[in-house]
Image 1 (tube, one colour):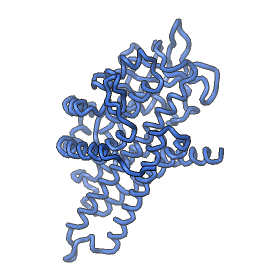
Image 2: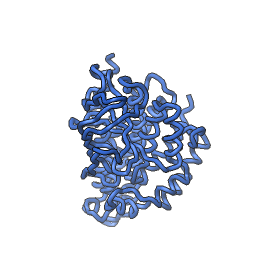
Image 3: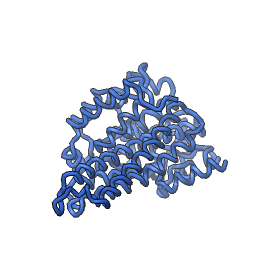
Image 4: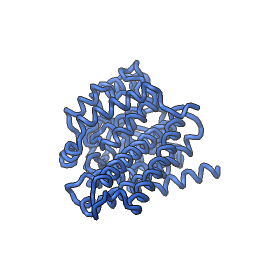
Length: 376
């Protein structure tokens, strides 16, 4: 097994790093926090120009035809730069759900538009309980003519306020758990769809509440009643991407803290020369490197579609969730009082870490998944 990225992937990393350094400063991130949608059209056009929305989409549909490990490289740099807007939703949810379960006609129509940056699709899974597993899906879709009628609510739907379509996980059969789940593609402007942005800890990446009031849904992704395998793979991709992003966010927070420790002088010495600060920074570094190792392995299992992904991905998400929250918190502590102020950027990284921890299931949820899979 080759444990390193290829030369092309390292070049992709360097180009992403340079682009984000020039185009995604913390000043821009703060502007997106205050923006009404956190989606800047000019910035999005630049991302489209780089081919990022279509990086993981096949070339026959206008994408880059990249591997999941190519996407991993971009995700880590995006985490360092706190990239705002719907990029994560597009590359980790919208694109994969159509790539995995879409018909030939759906792929040709939708994936081509996604790759061109002209279509944003999101996936609605969680409900009031906040669960991301099959058992948490209770929304019923009743048969109506040749299609279905949706009545109910979905919570924590990423970027639904700027999406062109929402892929809704609903119950159409009598089965329980993984049986009877159907993925329905609903235009975001369909009559009866009400989207409300939620106030969350990280307003650079919006979560929404979506209400369905007798909404007509006729477009099925995959097979009716058998949508869980498609959704499971999509969530696996998204979880691995999110874990990688959190590694990037924590790494950047660590880098900033170490640089501050080198330059902040107290009692005539840089604070980084004090043993307590040294130990704190070393502990942070070890945590980041452990998370990086787990996450890279998880991404490899997703890329190769090997059986170990069922434990590797939740293991990476569980560790990365705790790690990012703790490392960004410790980075604030290294800065002392100034780290707690609104004017300092460190809270931006902590906010992203907290949001990442909660998204797609927190650490205890994924540890339970790991234990269940290991025990069989």
